[in-house]
Image (tube, rainbow, N blue to C red):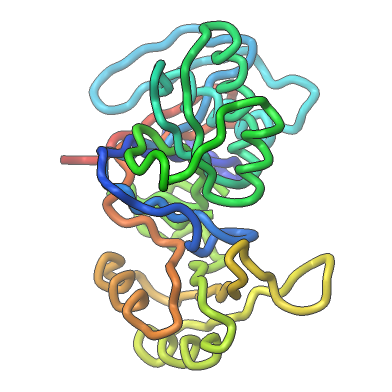
Length: 283
């Protein structure tokens, strides 16, 4: 498979009807967490010009689209990811989870287009303030998990995806192991008063280095939508991520991590050549 390099992967997941929550996980500017069980999809979308040919063989599909427009190749790849997710998985009468980040913008745009073109009845639940604003901006129906605890499909972005479709939430890297290509660390959301003891505990148990994520346009640390801090853990070796994720979440003061373990069923990669690759979780 051609590597996507710096381009974004959009991931989503099809979720079973069980209660869950949105908000609280460490991701970028603060907070995506989808704790509603179900099938999960990582997605890279279809170009706005429409797909060319689509072929399916085994567990990998490739959709070829026209060449990139005036936008950057990275942004074009994000558009491919976002639109493919919506094109292939959004259906009438669904409750959708809407994630955060630059790639999700293209997904929401395509959702809005399809709602108008096909008269779809959709309800959207945001994971963050940005997602909420996107839903309102495009005139989609906004809801929450109190009113709609059963989510059919959640769409979001991922920084890195390993061979088992475990994810670091938050540039679109396809790797055999987490950390092979993504070196900015795993985000950990913590309550402000606990960031020092949490940092010490994680590095003592698992090694690596932890940095408090600092804001760019203001003095001080990044503050999530929930009023918490984000630690970036730059690990120095491959771990058994399911065990590490549980152990970190058990540390007092940790709200959530940016590790998504055993949640994704499909991943779509927007590629440099304008195509989209889809990979399914091995069963």
